[in-house]
Length: 333
Image 1 (cartoon, rainbow, N blue to C red):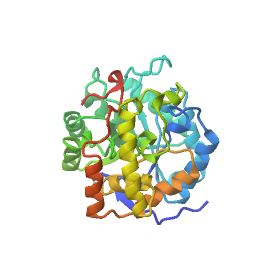
Image 2 (image 1 turned 90 degrees about the vertical axis):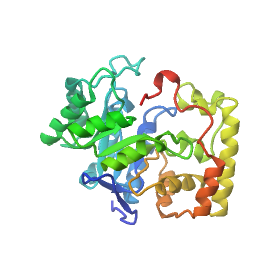
Image 3 (image 1 turned 60 degrees about the horizontal axis):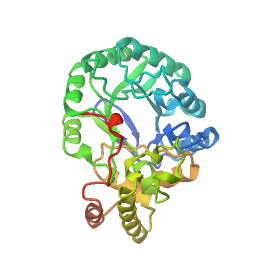
């Protein structure tokens, strides 16, 4: 299997982390979007590598503590592990699979999850270790210190945060340099623009947007919430609910018309928009389809004109209608 180096690379912050301009998220291969698909996921991962993708994103949560998602990724990349960046995450208490909203970033738990992740991924080192969600019961200074120790021990290369606010980012960075922040960001979701992006840029921290395609809404292949099975996140996502769904669908139709005029897909338009927001950004669209992987990575070759960007801003001046999480799951900055 040979990697294509045509996908441009980007610096993610100032700590030395680099990755192809488009990454790959693996969550949907085992959870959140209906029945998992290990075969499709493996094919998508390997196709991504062939196209020059180097950042692959997983998490303990994506296997609900079983390690299934990390093992899938570890097996799929075995032939080229040393050529890529593997990112995984800790921070949830998964002792009760029926309640995965509880957090646990105690130092001993971070170490336990890290050892499990190393074993599941079948690797000697985790390239990026993220705190998945900020734990209000554990000072971020303790979290940063623990990850710093793991870096000193050679088990981790870079420290990342996910869904952290400006104050938390600053406090963590003061203890151990934060290399990258991962938070939802897309033409649908713009909350990071006001305060978070300025802080990470001030501190030299890279930015990895997850759900860059609005959890699939920006693919244009959507249906109302009631038509998805209960184990699909879109069945309860506010953006798919009556009232919001129709507004968001109308916006996507306008974006699709713009994409058609430029002879690209609406997903490529959405990803190119993100890449245009700064050269320190590497989005991680998730898919189980090798064909979708190829379409997504091709977005790195798309350059949007100022007129294109202004048109997108007029279509979605503040993002999508509806909140991105139910209230109990909403990250608090």
